[in-house]
Length: 116
Image 1: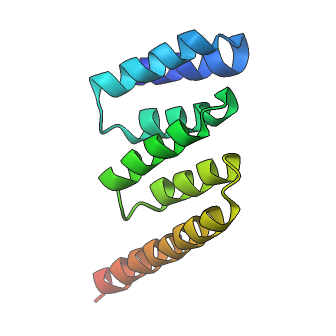
Image 2: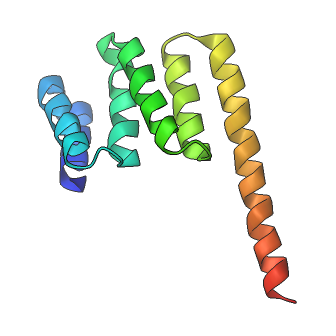
């Protein structure tokens, strides 16, 4: 599955073979629908193909699987930027930043508790 994601990225960015890239993104998702990388990269692939709505749909599916992930929240915000959904993007990206801060605080809490 990871090989399909890597190949799709290479096909997209270096070979400009967009149909092959999409085929490999879809294959990776088919093999593991819960893989964050496959769905995240695919959501970024779609807006430049003039399919921003589909990209946001993929990003929302990712977020549904990982609702507290700062990465999944940031991914949706970034795809919203690509789709020119400025107000929604701002709110989504702010929330992603908030989650990142909470993550750092949770890590610091675990460190402090381990020292007791």
